[in-house]
Every structure is written in structure tokens, then in C-alpha cells.
Image (cartoon, rainbow, N blue to C red; front, side, top):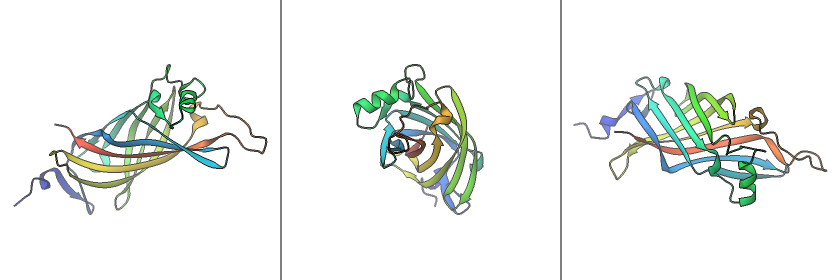
Length: 193
């Protein structure tokens, strides 16, 4: 006898993965974060509180795709002055460019539950290719009857390539804010009816 969860999952390359279909990022179970080095000696972490994504899981999982939108003004580092600076024209210019956009261009299987998601990231009016290291975290059904799967992803970008060039040179050498920014994403995706 087939259980109801079997109807929405399938086996692929040794993994139990979600059935083909359209899934949306669960806004209550996501984190779109980033890490920057500050004054060359410490890390500052932040996140974007408002982000949406649609994940289309294809019959051939390697043909799946992702489209995501992040609200620039939702940046949150827990410091109001720093957040206001990040929203300003010196960084994200959230008033003129209200969203950051990601659109996938391909998926490659690496090993086990690890994948590489290639795509194009747009910040302000600059679009650059990026590769996200993705870990498929599993598939299941919530207590509310929703079919879900979990994932985490990360990449590193050079913010200056996106026109985010503001900085201050330090007397001791180096700069106030690192060029390299690590992006960290964790989430659950929910099957859409």
C-alpha cells in the first residue's frame, strides 16, 4: 500500500525528493542572510526580512528552476544607523532599486544531497552570474498537510562588481567593509495547489 507521502515524493539518484511541481518559499521558515568583514577584524551579519521565491521542480530534477525577489529596504543588521546606510544610495539605493533579483540558469548535481545552482543576480542595475552551493535538506509533510522540502544555499560575491563601492580606508591598512560578501540562505518550500 502506498502512503500519501509517497505520492508527493520520488526516488532520484539515491535521494527522496519532492514530486514535480511548483513550490513557494515559506516566508515563516526562511533566512536570507549575509556576512561581511568589518574593519578587517570581525564579521557583521545581517539578513533581508522580506523575500519571495518560486521553485519549479521539474520531472528531471536537473531542469528545475528558481526565481527569487528580495526587498532591499528589508535589510536588517539590528543596528538602525547601519541599516539606513545600507538602504542609502551609497549601498543598495533601496528607494531607486527596491528589489534584488535572482533567476536560475541551471542545476548541477555534485554528490549526494549537494548541488550547484547557477544563475544571475541583479543588485541595483547590475546583473552578474553567481553559483550557489545548495544542500537539499529533505522532504516531508507538515502537520497542516502541506508538502514541503528544505534547503540551504550559500555563495560569495564581490560587492564592488555590483556597484556597491562605498568604503573607508583604515589608518592601519585595509578597509572598513570587505569587498567579499558571503550570502547564506536557509528555507522551506511549500507545494502550491
